[in-house]
Image (cartoon, rainbow, N blue to C red):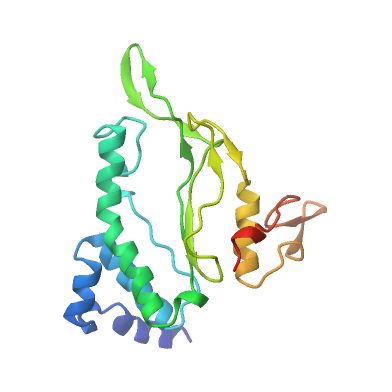
Amino acid sequence: MAFRMQKSATEVFDLSREPKSIHTLYGDNQFSKHCLTARRLVENGVRFVEILDGATGRKWDAHGNRGGLIGNHRTNAARTDQGLTALITDLKARGMLDETLIVWATEFGRTPFEEANREVKIGRGHHHRGFTLWMAGGGLKGGLTYGGTDDLGMNAIHNAVHVHDIHATILHLLGLDHLKLTYRHNSRDVRLTDVFGNVIHDIVA
């Protein structure tokens, strides 16, 4: 099996096999190529694909106010937008979006205020009370915004959910009941959502 995986990988990762129209759709930056590769992997039976963006140079990290928070995020969003849009468009056109769940998230939210150190502006800190992510496909309702923060962006106050709820929902969309995914560890039963988590049925189609 390992040999067959290695043999097929050379074909799957060969983006030159795609027509010019697909390359135009996705764009030609590195992240766009990652998105196109992800589609080819899913199309060839890979069940889990992770794309990372920002490790080199810590592009999204705003602790040091790199480029200013607005400039930093606007630049990064513009750089990744075409590839992500193309991935969704391409999967839908191929009839694969309904069975492919896309999750776009990061490690934390950001504080809505600017940190300061001896009057030197240093950007935004990690913030867990107001956090945004988006998901597409995989049995979700399309075009839906769920939840919201207060006027300052400090706290989620409308349809607030916990990260365990997100995990429970993702597992549900994958056909897994998070309440039944239990294993024994340190003399107690543990599951992927610990002792928490509720499926967010309002966003499920």
